[in-house]
Length: 155
Image: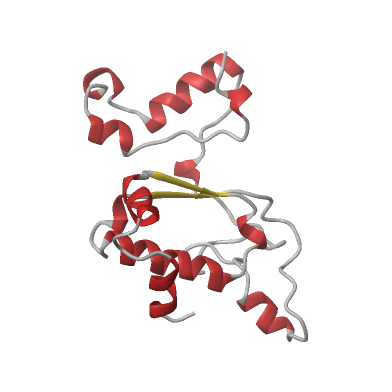
């Protein structure tokens, strides 16, 4: 899809464009099943609506089971099917184990001992200056703890 086609879907001055500008969080469920061109075109659309400099302040969360099958691309080669999917993280230089699973760097892992201590440890890891900077909108919005289910957050 060309940029002029993306612009036709959501003109910069439309109500839909204004809604996109005001949104702070975008959640894309079943992202692993999306074709790369769909995600790239949403990226183009948001950059156009927001202006390239302002898009960096939006948060996009891709959800879904990243272990599911690749998207169906009729009559495609294996390379074309993989190219159409989101099978890489970042720029493709992430370390993996012998089975191809991405290895999370040790400094990003919060050890689990028991529920109470582990929750406190997680909060300290994500919000190390919470006691002194809880009033700072920039500090609080620059961090997040995501949970798979709402019930995990309510206690």
